[in-house]
Length: 76
Image (cartoon, rainbow, N blue to C red):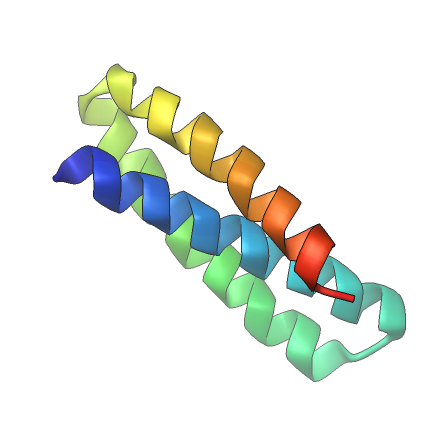
């Protein structure tokens, strides 16, 4: 269950990160700032979890790839 949660969390973090980049490039400081909070909080949770179990890096990497791919493909 932990592997699925961290996988899904990483997908969400990467989508949020892509949205942050889009709003930063568009010059929307409020939205970019809100998304940056999500990046930091989600990233902190994933770091805390994978420090206890290095095998969680596998679903983290997979989630990163899928999250970024989905955000770029559907974010236009």
